[in-house]
Length: 114
Image 1 (cartoon, helix red, strand yellow):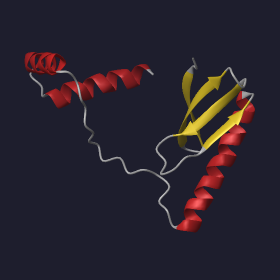
Image 2: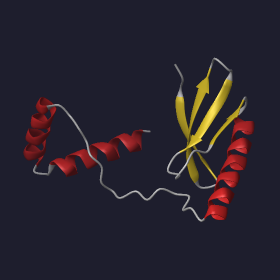
Image 3: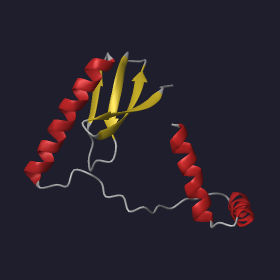
């Protein structure tokens, strides 16, 4: 099982995990319109490899006329069981907010803790 963390490299977020099978760290940028991953066995090397990988990715995007970053719309589908849906509706009503607002508050709380 790998541990997961995040790091910002040159203004772009990457999720970092450790792979004990190969004894290396693996980074993967998120929010990009393609894959840009990188590997190294130390944190310093990982950051350097991440910067190199990102530069190459951005260069390829520029050459091909591709927008490198995903466009997040601010909406997404969330599927939960019927019971959870009912509980969410009751909890939101009890707080005097919409289900969307309650979920947004929960997400805000989780992101503040990470």
